[in-house]
Image 1 (cartoon, rainbow, N blue to C red):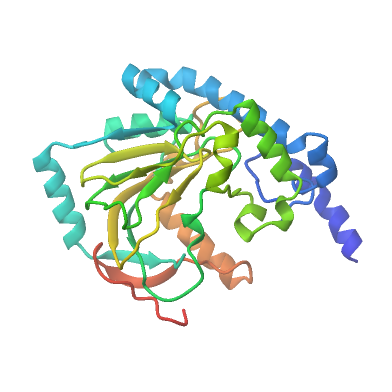
Image 2: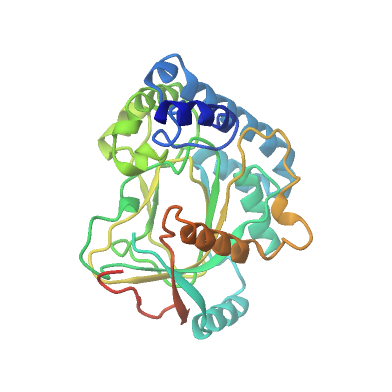
Length: 323
């Protein structure tokens, strides 16, 4: 019976090769040592990067020449004092003082939108949250996000408009400059890692490959940059580059407006996004959570983001030790 089920799933596994599917563990074709030794993963990486570069050329008018140069060199754009002071303080006060429906997991402005679209290489409608990261909430396994990693094998965008100051030793965003570029060394590393990824740590097996800091020099990269920043700083990054959440040496709270966007990397066009359709635009996040909750009720994978009622952005976590 198991062999029959695998044969029935084969067409779906083949179709996934033309999408952003990344799990070496869940798709035996993506995780196949034989196919990856022949160059399957490397070919997907190479094609995805070429298409992202092509889309960015068509989206270049959305950002300034200085921002394009900064991104091309580093893989991220950083803007201090992003909003006028009065506007930022009004926004910050409203978001920090308003209780909103919240979820917890243990583990736009035109300038903002243009940057997210250029870095993400699509005319996307980013998902935006007010996000609070609390450290040292309880004793548990190490946070997997504190190890340098690429989110996936292709261009994707994340953005942070920090509403609080972020100290160097209180969980700052960390990024390896230039690691978004597909160099021969990086492509060789991707191919080598794909041969063993299905048997590595859980996050690597699911397609978010981890890299140790001592490997960076051999890949031609310098040390990571730690974004110890003041509030009202915007960072937009391509998370195919190696990045992490820096460790926090003490209980700390980081509050930010967080934006995210990722689409099928093999689409040649920049637009035609489902999330921009009438009736869906502006409702994507709510629909996403309802689908995740419904799938859990049907017996699918547990949704790690748990409802915790309404919270203000700076409130302490509600998830208990056993949640």
